[in-house]
Length: 195
Ligand SMILES: [Zn+2]
Image (cartoon, rainbow, N blue to C red):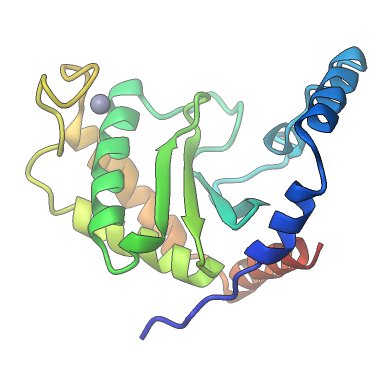
């Protein structure tokens, strides 16, 4: 049974209302002057990041998870065709799954080490379950969904077998995550919700 997740929309909305467009523009300008272009995902220490499933950011009530398939800068990256197929397969399976209504976006990282999953109203454990279920479904696909010329911007660049191989190893990694590792991400998310 899916439990109702805690929402924190009200708190962040009031903060957004406090700033006028002119104030926001001034803030952007001053950041540009300081050459401060840092965004949350650049602040992660990519030298220490291991493959895994991480809570990344919470903006308004949108929670981003970092599905890290590969260790950054370790020479092993997702092949472009497999990455592309995984995008199609998991986007389909996640939206069609039990938690489909909570899925806002799923897409690849440009560095080809993993994917971003944007959700609303999900605990870390629910998001993890959604991803595991989606991978199990995707592993049963006989073809890549949405990979016809009319449906995709680069329909020849797909690799169903390669995608399944990467998905299988990521599923093994997820199945091996310790309760502590999941708890740690829940705690990081809860911390952001309080802020
Ligand atoms: Zn495509």
